[in-house]
Image (cartoon, rainbow, N blue to C red; front, top):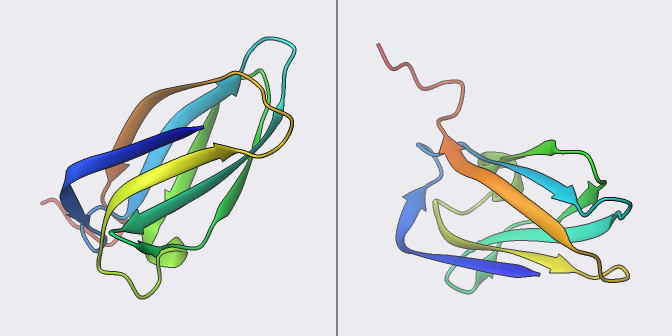
Length: 101
């Protein structure tokens, strides 16, 4: 798995979605458990089905982290038979309600 801890925390009201691309090695697939958290308080765990085709994963933070105002880390755990996976283009986006103009 992978564990990402950011020194700065993120406001869920402003960073509404966590997005990334993910795929398994050619010919592989499996399930990853994804959890975002703030300090020791975890958001609702999400299951990610990973195949050998690049797929965008979008986590709506307000839904997955109901009750939390901020988050500063996330983890992907490989609980199925272990497989190699790749992540790319990890970024945050504002929720649809944020008007930039």
